[in-house]
Length: 172
Figure 1: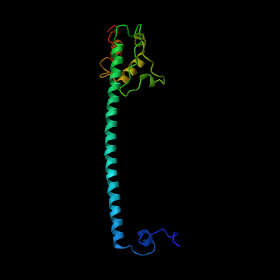
Figure 2: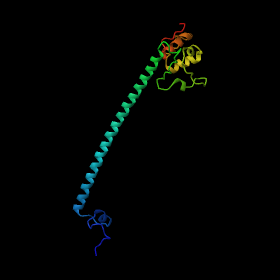
Figure 3: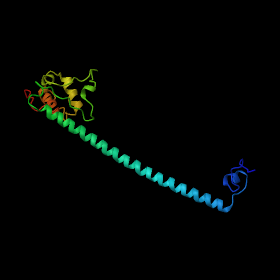
Figure 4: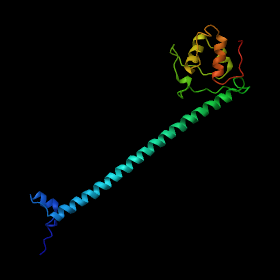
C-alpha cells in the first residue's frame, strides 16, 4: 500500500524547517537560487512599473499642455468672432472665459448677484460703474485703475476690447 497521505517529500525545506530540522545543503542552495530569481524578476517588474509611471506622468503633462492650448485657441476664436462688424448687434457676442477657464457668469459680484452675460454692446453701455469695474477686475483689464478713475467710457471701451469687440465705439 502506497503512502498517498504523505505528499511532502522527505527533503521538502518547509516540512523540514517546521520539524526543526535543517534542509540538506543542496535544498538550501536551490531555495536561495529560486529566491534570487524571483527577487530579480520582481525588481525588474518594479523598474518597468516605475518607467511606465514616468511615461504616464509625461503623457499627463503633454495632455495638460494640449488642453491649455486648446482653451487658449478657443478663447482667441471667440474674441475673433466678437470682432466681426455685426457682432454685438444682430449677432450676440460670445462669452469670453477668464484666465482660469471659468466664465464670468459663473462668478458672484460683490453685491451677491452673478455677473450678467455680455451679449450685446448695449449691455456694456448700460453697466453701472460698480459692475463695469468689477468686470474689468475679473478679466484683469485694469493695469492702472487711477488712470481712468472717473471716465466710464474709457472703462467701457477697455471691457469691449478685452472681449474682442473692437468694432464697438463709445464716446471717448
